[in-house]
Length: 125
Image (cartoon, rainbow, N blue to C red; front, top):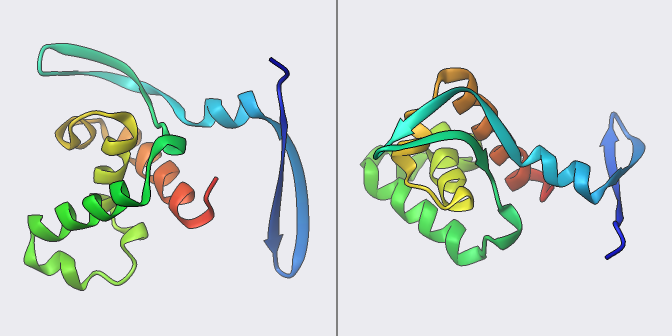
C-alpha cells in the first residue's frame, strides 16, 4: 500500500503556511511514549496510542456527558476543549483505556496527552 502525504495548512497572523507531512509522521504524533511508565490494574503501560481517527461524534458527546456528570460545575465550562479533565476523558476514549489510567500518568505525560488531544479537537489533526 502506498504511503500518502498529507498537506497541512496553518494560518498564522494572516499568513498561510503549508506543510506536507507523511501519513506515518502524523500517525506517530499520536503514539505517545511515556516518560514514566505506569502500572494500572496490573498492566504496565509504556506508551499510549491515541486513535482519534476512529472516534465518532457520539464518543465526543459521551465524553462531554461524562465530564458534566463528574461535577455540576463542569457544565458551565465554556470551552471544554481547553479543560484538562474533559481532555483526559476524550484521550481515554481515543486510547481505549479507562480515564483513571490517563489521570494516573506523570504530569509531563498527562500534559503531553491532553495537549495532543486539545490540538486534535481544535484543529481536526
